Image (cartoon, rainbow, N blue to C red):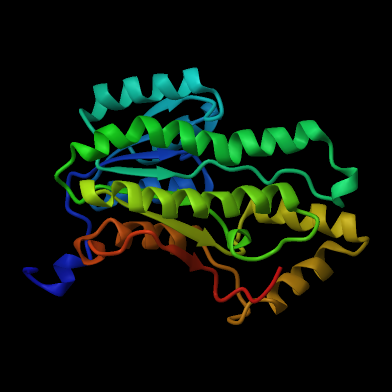
Length: 265
């Protein structure tokens, strides 16, 4: 079936890949990883400066400036994808924001709506545009949605975020059934506590809401992880590569945690 198991663990060179919110953090790590294994990569992001930094660091990646929660911007992204890539084999739907932190009775409706727009609606906008292209791919087509460990655990003081991340798992499992007969695989990656500036902001906000120091909140996060360490963006990117490799050809409809076994939130 495979030339070798080692070959099966590598994505096929030349995959046409779209990474949303791909200019920084997990998205940029995923984009660079696919580029390094010979993929043709297109990235969209709302941050022009971050897009410019990415293309400086990884020449050959093409980009579109876009707000993923705006359907017209998503249309423009796919115009560019068709022009730059000529089709699509992999969608890594990575868009997400932290949303507000606090007890539910203190949250503003506008903050809830914005979190849903970015963290859930955007994934719908990209999936409905990507699926016709993926159906025409003959390269083990794959849709990956970036959920969160908050998509399998309750997350006090972060209800808008957790609600959208649970919803993504439902989207993935439903699309896996819908698209399986067409040969399109659909999975979710659930990162845990990821090292970086974004996590530092989350820790700071939650520490403030709980009335404790940022260091105390960081220590609390680590105590909840069986391996007692945070994961890195490269850990998450490695899982994305695996899910798009021949070795994963029968993996679909799964919500796969990359979190060091985060026990609770």
